[in-house]
Image (cartoon, rainbow, N blue to C red; front, top):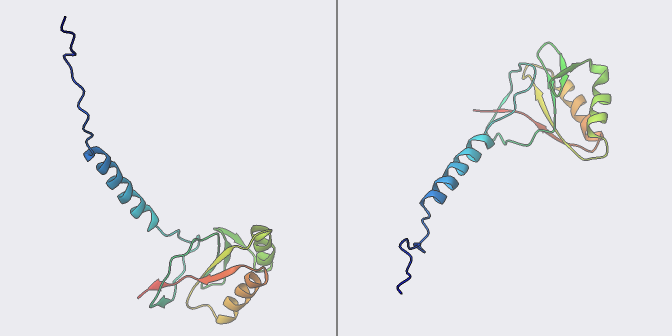
Length: 129
């Protein structure tokens, strides 16, 4: 009695489909990691030689005509400290300042001082040359 299987299973494993999937995932993550979250109000950022991209937990935007927004929500100047306090409570966060290059430095220092007083890391958003 010759009982033998007619369909033999090939023990070799083809890695070509696995490498295609890994390659597509790599391209997807490279593309999505380079996206920068734009701020809510249009500002003309100053230029810088080195422009590092940081994870934006909280963004504060000051436009040329001194309109303030925190995380794309327009707030009056007097409420900036309250907004930052509520967003950064119980944690040490990252605050990114999107300040128009025509805004006087005193406004930058004021917002940066509020954020630093709440023990947040402060960064200034710039655009590369």
